[in-house]
Length: 158
Image (tube, one colour):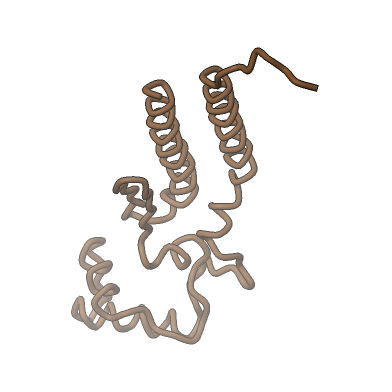
């Protein structure tokens, strides 16, 4: 029974490791597009990926029609030390926001797929196969452990 518990513990650790590996590849697909990188958190048997709120815009641009949040745009302008002649940093941020609302960003991709879903699906088959193999190994071990400890009846009656 101790072997079975140890096997279950190794299996759980393996699943967590597999999930972290999978989510690491997923966030690696998105990280080049944003300054803030995805974060993987493990809590018990739960493994979560947290991505920046703006990952869709960072990956595929922003379509015309809506201004970016003013505080985010002002922060961006200050970080890059951008200032248009005759305007304050705030005025520059507003001008850029208004332009984005009117024209979209230069990198905007019309009908772009969902950035997070695309990154998740990219390696799904590979990790689905790894998960299935892990489950089969555990099932084989558990089955052999059960049968190994099962008493064998020596007297058979027809």
